[in-house]
Image (cartoon, rainbow, N blue to C red; front, side, top):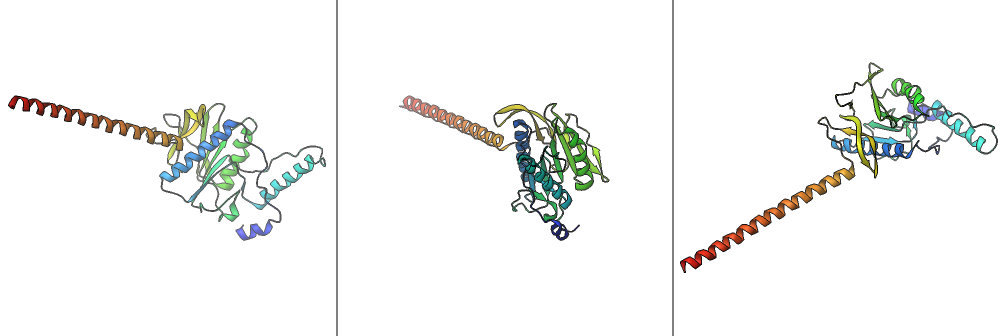
Length: 266
């Protein structure tokens, strides 16, 4: 369906958000960490033609958009006492985090609407598993990413067990990504590995999904980058201070020797 034809079928307001928060504070921080690292990695690759989003709706067809709008309408009826039971939310809304390459980064987007983006679907998708979403993420969502989105890579991360899984599209079918020697998963889209790291992010200690360079080093967060630059600056100042101290000592020794020589010659 062309973008023009799709727009012609939209005779209702797109739902921009449903007010449902992420499962836990950890889920929220993990999503923020992942997106921060994706932005840093894309900058390292010299690319700014991308969009990386998290916890926002992705609309891929008018039928899906209409289903979401109807569910929200039925929920409003329930909340206002015009419906006995709340509706089940079964319509697809979006992933926890995703990356789309080759798009205008300057556009303001509250949601990702495929027919307004020249038919561009996410190239990489990440879902953070929880007991309430695991079956949907492994089943219907995986089918959507494989058959409709045709996303190049799909990653799952289980915060409770701290395990990551990944699939890569091959001949229109997802093939599981085999973990490397460190148990990490290679991403062709980001040209780094995804793996588990123990440390502190935003003053929260835990096991986090991080991006790793091929040599095992971490793609740094902004805070880590600032800390590393400060440490390098401190080390450089200490080196310069030591050099000055050695020069001052050498100059003092030379002055002393000259004074002694003058006494002897006198």
